[in-house]
Structures are given as structure tokens and as C-alpha cells.
Amino acid sequence: MKRAYWFLIVAASMSIFCGTGCQVHRSASACPRLPGAGAVIDASFYPTLQAAIDAVPEGGGVVRIPPGTFEINEPLKASTSDLLIEGAGTATHIKNVNVEGKPALILQHPSGSDDRKHELWRIRLANFRITGNDKSGSGIEARRINEVFIDGVTVSYHGGDGIVLDNCYEDPRICDSLITYNKDTGLNLIGCHDIIVSSNQFEENRDAVRCIDSYNLTMTGNNLDDHLGDGIVIENTYGSVVSGNMIEECRGTAIVLDRDCYGITLSANVIAHDESGGIDLRDAHGCTISANTFTIMGGHALAIGPNSGRITVTGNNFSDSYIGGGKVKRGADDRKAGGMIIVGTSDVVISGNVFSGVRPKALVVEGEPSKRIVFTNNVLTDVESDHAKLDDSSLVNDNLEPVK
Image 1 (cartoon, rainbow, N blue to C red):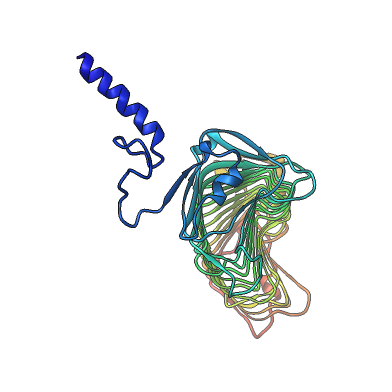
Image 2: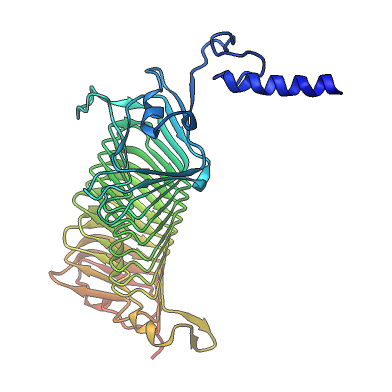
């Protein structure tokens, strides 16, 4: 028994000296490595987090950050492809104490150049918490990183954006993360392509998500709550889907499409109690708005402006908080429940929707005459509506009107 006991003590002591984690050899140089194995950096053996990140060789590797709170006053910089920076969950807390507007973490090619010839590939951030303050910059800035992957990361309290993906063109993925209380946008996507934003929670940023000058956004299964501005703003982007999200209590508008958006589907979202409105199509064409639930909206639940057209609106529910038996859940707040407005638009199908208890009307028609509007097979309950104002270029029939 004593011999076995001492053998365990000796083996454990030898493993301390072997940087590879080997349980046999006393030194890394004596330890045979798996052919092709890359570097695994334990940040606890380095004087700073930056030193640990800098220890990753050109071919890439892993930086593992232990539990603890690590204060920084200059941005951490990672400039290696095929890199994983991983913490131990929220117990790993990187705290940016900088008050000069500098970000916490920058991912960028070592040259600092901003062009397609100076890009990095495959950087993943996982399982840690990163915070700032009112005077710090953004939390995470990724500049021209292809196939960037951020999951299980908490990004909070920054003076700028939470996460910025700047021309991260190929296949960026943001999943299962918590993005909260940032002074600017929670997730700012600029010039990205084939984007996945899934299963994240956004709360009380200015705007939750902005997707600008991009392509092919897939945003599904996220929860957005209590934003001080808008929920989702999409500009100059096409071929995208926003579905299955919960968007509640934004002071601005839940979803905005602007500046030459086209070919976008907004479907199966629950859009609730947003102060300025639900979906605002400011400059959008060839888009589908389907199977959304708009409830107790502060402004118009759906607005289609004069710079938008060729829109399909079907299978949506526009409602107050009616719960049956002649009762509403929210009482006086239901006066905010908004319907739909069209302003000088054309070639729009509005069919198979339910408008119930919304104000001022199920459909408001304003501005220059809207042309070629189909308003059919809708159910209107406890509402007024302007659909009778639509001109002879439009088709209006087979709607169930309120009982008078």
C-alpha cells in the first residue's frame, strides 16, 4: 500500500513539470506528442491574458482561461487563425476597466489592414463573461474574421456595442449567448454573409441587432426584451429570414427593414408591447410577413411605407389582450393595441389575417393612393378599417366584417 501511495505522489509531481499534461514524463521535451497536435495554452501559467494569447503559434491553438476576474485596461488582441479562446463559464470574467472608449477584445489580422487579402479564419470564443463600463468601447470587435464563432459568451455593460462583426464575410455564427445592457447595439453586423444568429438572449441594449450591408441573415429562436431603441434593424440586406423570435417591450420598433432590403421573410415571431410599433417596412420589396402574432402594440403593428411594395401579408394575428368572456387582460393599456397602416404603396397582398380589438383601425390608409392592393379573406372583430378606401385598382372582398 505504501509503495502504491508513493507512486501516485511521484506521478502527480512529475505531471506538474510536464507542460503537455503528460502523467509520465518530467519535462515537455521528454514527452512524446501526438503527431500533428497543436498548442494548448493554460492562461493561468502566464503573467497576463495577452501573454497567453500571444503564446499561440501561427498555426493556431487553444487558450484556456481559468475561473477568476481579470481586469484589463487595454484591448486584448488575437491575431491567429484556427484559434479557440475558452473560459470556464461565467466564472471566467474579463472586465474592461478602460475609460477611454477602447474595446475589450479585438480579433484582427496582425497587419491591421482592412481588405480581403488580410483576413483570418476560424476563431471561436466560448464560455466566458466579458464586461465593460459606460466609458469603455465595445465588448468584442471582430474585423475580417471568416467563420467566426461565438457561443456561450456573456457580453454586458459596454459603453459601445456588445459585439461588432465588421466584414466577417464568410459564415459568422452567434449562438447561445447573453448580450445585455450595452450602451449601443447588442450585436452589430456590418458587411457579413451567410449569418447565423440563434438561441441568444438580448436585453436592454440600445438596439438589439443591426444587420447592415449584408446577405443571408438567419435569425431564429432569440429572445429580445426591454431595448431602449429598436429590436432588429436590417438595411441593404437580402435573402434573409427572421423567425421564431420573441420581441417584447422595445421603446422603438420591433423590426425595421430599410435601405433597399428585398427577399426577406419575417415569420412566426411574437411581437408584443413595443412602444413605437411592430414591423416597419421603410424601404423593402419582395418580402413576406407571415404567421406573426402582434399583441398590444404601442404604434402600428405593421407599417408599409411609400418606398416599399410587392409585399405578402398573410396568416398574422393583430390583437389586444382579449382572453374571452368579454374580458381583456391589460385593461386601459389595450388602447395601445395597433393594427396595420399602408402609405402610398403598391402590389401588396393582405389575406387570411385576424384583426381584433386594435386601434385606431385594422387597416389605416394614408398618403398617396395605394395601388393594386389585395385585401381579402381577413377577419375583423371589434375594429374599424379603411379598406373601403382602396381604389379600383385593388381587390377587396370576402372579409368578415365586424357585427354592427
